[in-house]
Image (cartoon, rainbow, N blue to C red):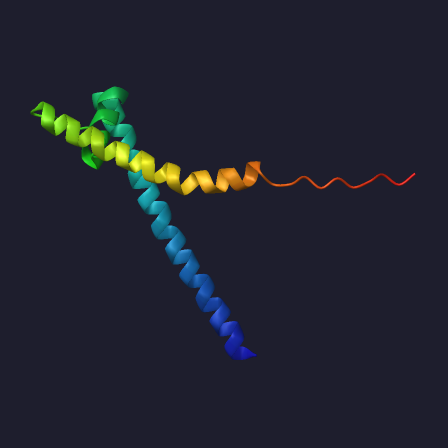
Amino acid sequence: MEKAMTEKKGAGIFMAIMGGIGAAVGLWALAALSFSLSKAGLSEVVRQYMVAIGLISEQATLVDFYTHIKGVEYLVCVAFFAIFPVFFKYVNTTKVTVPSQR
């Protein structure tokens, strides 16, 4: 019984430490975001974020641009092929009606 109480107390301390670390990281991220917004403005911060994660980039030639568009098209096709069977099954389910009791 005493061992279970000690383990429960240890788990509580661990969760408190992890929560404190998470709160500190969250506070730091909020401070960094608010500072960058105050210095550069929303549009520049969003542009830099999109460049950093690879959503937008400079294409030097038409072939680079076409290759990028083709890659995005392939991703859209894969998403469609994954989602369409689920949608088709949802649309074509038989509706069961329960007769009313009078």
